[in-house]
Amino acid sequence: MGKSGKIVLTTGVFDIIHPGHIRFLEEAKRLAGKDGRLIVIVACDSVVRKSKGRSPMFRARDRALMISRLKPVDAVYVGRRGRLEKNISWFLKKIRPDILVFGYDQESVMKNTLKVMGELGLRIRVVKMRKFYDISSSKIIKRIKKS
Image (tube, rainbow, N blue to C red):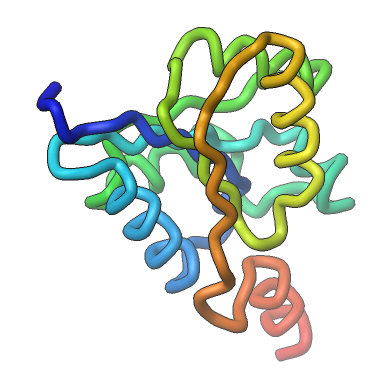
């Protein structure tokens, strides 16, 4: 990897891919620099059920497949079941990112990640992205149910 490249790590559900996801991933990749890599962790189904109060439209491995085919994304992992803090710790140690990117709506995950970083003594740049479009997978699902 070149001198200017960094490893950027982000996570999300990515249930129904929409323009907000695309812009989010493009901006995260831009933070990685010229020779950098964007690595995405797709939330496992049990985490989606717990956090969204509904089952995902697509299974985790299918959501990971869709995300892996997007141009800005260099690698994809499916999140693991179990305690969130344990999973965060495992991925941070495995991937060793330079930058962590969180979506505008990921306050809880960001808080847990900062806690784990503190416990591990890790100093990683954290970026919270703005909202790019007034759209979400949940809004799309509601709109479909209405029609």
